[in-house]
Amino acid sequence: MRKQMGQSTQSIWGGEQEHELFERSTQVPVVHSVSFAYKDIDTWQKVALGQEPGHIYSRNTNPTVRAFEDKVKTLEGAQAATSFASGMAAISNTLATFVQPGDRIVSIKDSYGGTNVIFNEFLPPLGIDVALCETGDYVQLEAEIAKGCRLLYLETPTNPTIKITDIKRLAAKAHAVGALVVVDNTFATPINQLPLELGADIVLHSASKYLGGHADALGGVICGSHELVEKVYHYREINGATLAPMDAYSLLRGMKTLKLRVERHNSNAMAIAHYLQSHPMVEQVNYPGLASHPGHDIAKQQMSGFGGMLSFSVKGGLEAIKLFLPKLQFAHMAANLGCVETVVGPPVTTSHVECSAEERAAAGIPEGLVRYSAGIEDIEDLIADLEQALGVLK
Ligand SMILES: *Cc1c(COP(=O)(O)O)cnc(C)c1O
Image (cartoon, rainbow, N blue to C red; front, side, top):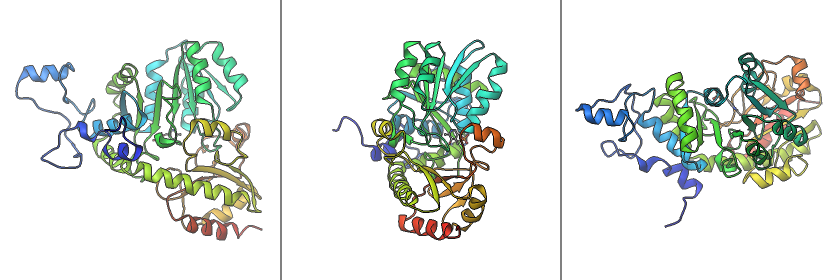
């Protein structure tokens, strides 16, 4: 027997064998039941006290939701996982579990728009100080960490600038001051990057993106040690931001093809990045798989694939984008990413919709940027589609 399953086997079998088959069904059933009944008080009490396995009430735990958590846990190589109604619920519940008034958080300026709102708008009035550093400025990041902090929060690659941060290097600095390290692994997925192996304490996801992969279910998940996950689980079971069983099922089914899909996302994005780089109307292409990307060397060390997300700017800015994006035949113009279809959009309507033009400029996000989530279509069709759409620009 091999010591560890490969990632395709993990995607398919991970978590599934830990559950009793229901009426011999081969697939995890969708258990919609709100509660679980017992025939005697003693067993009920043992399960309620966690002395015997089982479920009590679906706000806390549910068999379908548990199977989803176990699959993600297997893929991330973690002891434990717990899940949430959305990626933002995973992020906000994790932060609320670990930071108290008077604590400091160190993070980067380029994290997801919603995460940035928590850092800039929600936490400071609670007496939580957030030091947001330039992504990739290790002098600033290490100086802020060295001042002491409760939590280092990283996201790599970032949205929509596709910047890379060295997880191992900063996790070591954070641990030296006793801080917890949390990494948003949504863009990379466990197929391309395993933050816990790089020193993170908690890895989290918006499962609404690549994990589910079909843009038909919202969800979030965190993984880590039994001890840390138990704390976040306790906050979530009371806070009530629970993942619904039907969504858990959709995510679980989507995840069976995670490895296959991510391999195709990786190769399509790489081919598109190369194509765009030599297009006369394209000014800049951000993709960590390109040797010209400033984070390429770190990405090569900490990632086993460069992911399906890229961004690029075109000559003529936002006006040019308004002309050519609607011409794409095989791409949704939409706010999501990480699904089987290609999805495109500018930051003004996607990741940075809540920012002013000045704030976007300050964050280094050009108005003429296009975020491109490469789907798993045939690469020849995607490139031909870009060729005809970009052809309208002169
Ligand atoms: C979408 C996204 C989130 C938020 O997830 P939701 O499921 O939409 O709440 C967080 N982080 C990243 C990197 C994302 O792309």
